[in-house]
Length: 334
Image (tube, rainbow, N blue to C red; front, side, top):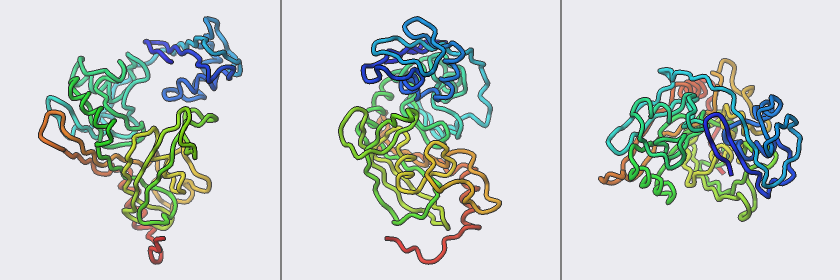
């Protein structure tokens, strides 16, 4: 269990982490927000208390039931630059549909976090009073896109719309289509990936596939993909996740030998920027884009669908590969 407050995070060590190293336990509890390297640095700076006592050794062991308190360093309020602002695709009294740029997180790390985010942009543009059922640091946020993932997302302006949209996501009636530029040669024209996911105990900021179908933290995950364009050693994929697990698309594609270009967290062996043709634009981020979103409007009127075209960086790399790395020979789909 973790609690947030301006300037600090508090967590209770669960029984499952009894006797674990402080840095690994903190990463397991707070890894969604902070990297392990950053947490280790803060431990060494004396920003972590265990049962009320400052501990500066990252390898110190902790016990179940102990309270871990992290004192956050002062945050500098940075303005949201024009290029960071989401583009409004649709807006009404119920909700807004946005085209989120890569590099902008959906929400802050704790209530009052003034770092740039979609949530902060919403408050500054539309004022206070947005629904916060997912946490005080997430006003209006119905679902998440990873920081580096660009594209379509929906936010809610009032409570009924928020509850209705969340229910649709929970019931998996929302239709999502992503586009990804990947390394590798797809063996098939299209396929399903049906692999359960679980948090990686050695790297708590990551998830991994597992053969287990039950157990603590094991989640079902289902992803459909198909080839839009095939290049020589690369591909442009259409991806439709049927579940909404953390990092699902990135993990699933990497597990099939098709890691997403620019993804530094889920790099697959033998793939990397050095494979790109000379002169290719460097993928400066994970080349994943949420292209379309279809859902039933909570205000009535049936289903609505919104689309965001490929952003400039992905289109530039896609066009380069089409011109300089055309697919060789017949498709040869298995």
